[in-house]
Length: 523
Image 1: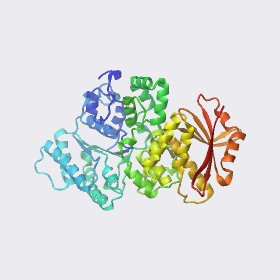
Image 2 (image 1 turned 180 degrees about the horizontal axis):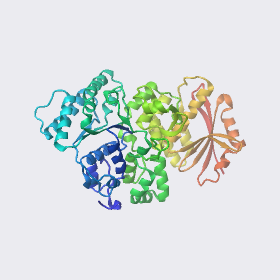
Image 3 (image 1 turned 180 degrees about the vertical axis):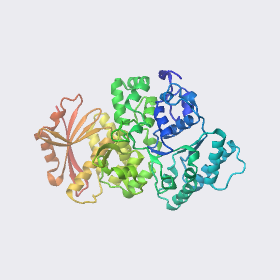
Image 4 (image 1 turned 90 degrees about the vertical axis):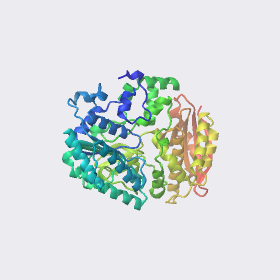
């Protein structure tokens, strides 16, 4: 294999054989691949989209096929000594959105395997044909077979709000999957990947021994890239990124962490970076929002529109551990869906409850690009245009123009479900906060200083904005300005090597917007 400094970045490569023979980087997960392959007969791994599930399934395929040549120099060579060659039946359900297409994909795969194994008189139903395939492969090789089903839940995700079509799909699953229990003596491993778990299928009810390894500490990093792996495997690419951005390598790593790190799939397990975003960032020598650009947001938009709240900040969501780990895919619980889809991750655990939050800046921005138009009752293009103008103004240290656009975007904010002054004030704070998140700011909320608590501090790469917000019925802009001055809020930031601006804002319940503001730059 090539020296890692001369390897290529595996953009779009999900095939392990191509990756290893093509001179691409590979973050070595082969020891965990061996453990999964040799520890479970039936197992399921859930991870968000674009997180390397297909590459993992392909790696298992090569391992079960006895391709030791592809694993030379990897950790698995210390674990596997025999390398038996097994028949592998590999199914991929990604992109399927109708029951007819699902049945055709399964049947076409079975036809190909029947031709490979020279079966000329197939049975009629899917389950019986699969049993025949497994028996024939077992008799010819003397080895139990392996079955891989990648993105098993994609057809069900795509029809989550189409009751009749989804029921037709479930009937196909119920026809197909029971064969693996019937033929379990012929089976070494059935490995399934997905985003959501649909327990009402025969997959989990008939195959009641399916082990969900998604939350196990030992596999917390089986998909994704740890910080150590990033630094060790992509050292040259990080150097190139730092040079392009005119920053140090430690600064580049810190920025990569803020943008793409922070996923935890076990509360005690190590965190990981989103591999898709990391590879693209290193290739482009830039740090943009790559994950959200791959799509997959249509269902989220529907979920938020139907079952979300315009007031909820999902950071710090509390969810029962058993509910998160064992619940079926749920078309009404937004928090559970956001975790399964990768918008929230495990932050902490205590007394049977998980605390969830955003893993990183990329994900937070992706979610609130969807949430904010709903909260503001404005179309996405209008919100995007306005936030872009704020971003440009802040980059140019033109804070007055930024505030002018902020005032414009907040105008006409809908009333809260609770029409009280406090509720609407919280709505305004929520909106302001997430607009600044979309403008590449890191935020401090309710920052405690010696003489009080600052409402909001936005840390932009070019400046710091210290903000105090008050309703017109609570003293408005004048009271906010006095509070900033009297309690010396800006003093906490005078040591920073960038301009600090104090901003007092007045909001009106009656006018449903920001009625005035005042900006002053700290001396």
